[in-house]
Length: 367
Image (tube, rainbow, N blue to C red; front, side):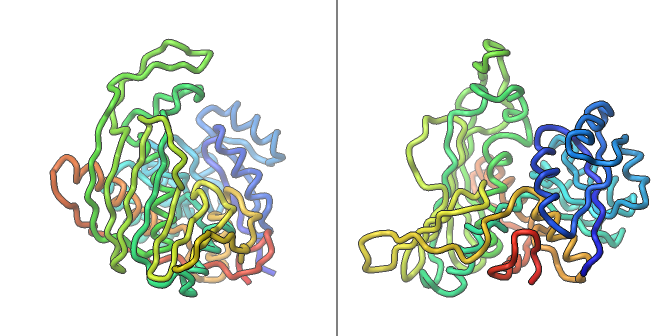
């Protein structure tokens, strides 16, 4: 039996609850400490989830028992905190996005290499039963060779319900950096790395008005594109068309569809871990829901658990820093292409993450 990997968590905001609960599902993980700049908030989360130690971030980084630090700070701090974690001799796993620009994300990879430590990043939803089933079907040739894909995330924005929506309209926010990691990570998992992007990006509404009850009427200045469209060319020859928007009243479009030479596959919402998965073979009139080949009992923290198993087994982890850096470069390329009026070549690459073994129990990841 593999020894447990001890985890420390920095950043005790709302998303931390999902990680506390998700990590508890895996035999390999043990959260031994949590930290926040607001010590009282860390103490409250420690009491809520039965964590032995609540402390400052500096105290957590100095704790020799902690092997992996889960970085749940605000996006602007993701890359700088990752560097601190790595320099402290810990492995780092961070919430998405990996960084706000490619210079920062590349620097994190360089520090990880120099320190001999691993770095990983959400989203880990591609490790759920839905997208893992899609991966197996695709690899088995269920729809033939991939030809193209479409991806849609379209909504009117978050100011009507979110208690603090300002971030979504600042650098590092917008629909691409907020939701793009789910879609592009899923596409890379299915199709492999990207090689070129062409995009069009704009700010439709320069100012937003909060309508959420407690702050109704307050204004937000929009500083990042909120409607982004474009195309990704993949190294395997497939192309994907994306529309990511905070500017529209949505129409019932699918989240993600992959077209092949022998059929079409509807991929489940990449912001979820489950299904359904539907396939329509060439010549058939209807889509058929496919049985899931992988467990759907996954949640936030699966990527951390996979890193922990990888550390113990000496294998690559799936939600890797190289994958996350590649995703950052692809996301940033849409606005870069729009501003330059030209295609943008993607300079990074990554391996397709290895598929999970089918049929493994929900509380483990390795067969």
